[in-house]
Image (tube, rainbow, N blue to C red; front, side, top):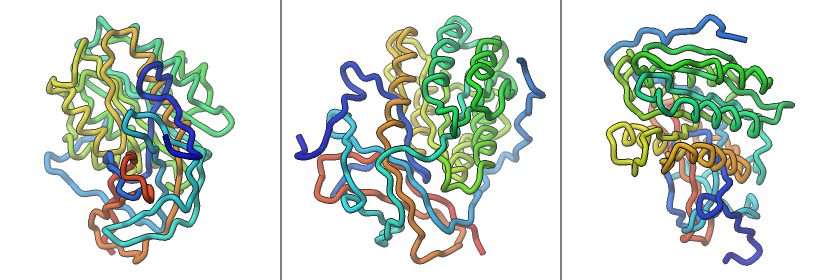
Amino acid sequence: MLPGRRHNAGIIGNMQSWLLRAALSPIVLTVLAAGQQQTPPAAPPQDDTTTHISVEVTRVSMAYSVTDKKGRFVTGFSKEDFEVTENGRPQTIAEFTAEPTLPLRVAVLIDTSNSIRERFKFEQEAASQFLDEILRTTQDKAMVVSFDSSVQTPCDLTSNTDKLSSAVHELRPGGGTAMYDALKYASDRLGQEQPSYQFRRLIVIVSDGEDNQSRATRDQALEAAQVADTVIDAISTNNLSSGDTDGDKVLKYFTSQTGGKTYFPFKLEDLTQSFQTIAEEFRHQYNITYRPEPLVNDGLFHKVQIRVKGHKELNVYARQGYYARKS
């Protein structure tokens, strides 16, 4: 038990928690000292080669959470308790908040392919409840993206939870699976909300992780999320899965690289609990902003680490870094 710190039950036991994180590419860091369908936009054609996308960054914003070894959120830290490095160089934290005050932009991606037909009703109910609970309608917005053989947007970014709920419940399963295209499309759309440092971005994907129709590659989808400073959380619909299926491994790849987590409900009814866990983490986030020193547009990936000073036993969930534009 940390003196002066409050542990919030989350992720274990009766976790009624929800999750999200950062604004740069993630990894779980073991801390050292620290109604109706609109015109459905289809994912644009992609080349087979993986392209590196980069952004010009003058200041970096990162949302992140801190947990103990049992997965419980640790709150009560101040700006002075954290240290940030970029490519190994210490950075000066310019702004700090201990509560998630930044507006949230959320994309819920729902797999409507034939492979999830038997589980679809549970997905709809859980997703609808999630959107209703996580949005602060005065400043947050969400969108619904469905994917089977193609990508569609039943509801674009809005704060109207009734429209979002209607869009979710009007979805019907059928067809193949274009998950990578959906991830890339949602990342690009969320990335249009600028300036980047003024928003938190989250993609929640509900799927079995299989893909057989996408034009985009897995790495192109990941890089689009990294460029948009978007965290990906995933809820596997593989029944009784322990995370060992090929699809589950793909989901874990996306979440681990963007500061998110993958959930494996033991039964369909647990989908709601997984969504609640994601939302709870958003309520226990810290947020920092810094101006990179030196500020270099070199076209390379800049690795960022956040640590809690003097607490090796704690974990920080944050994005791994970002691609800078080549000048």
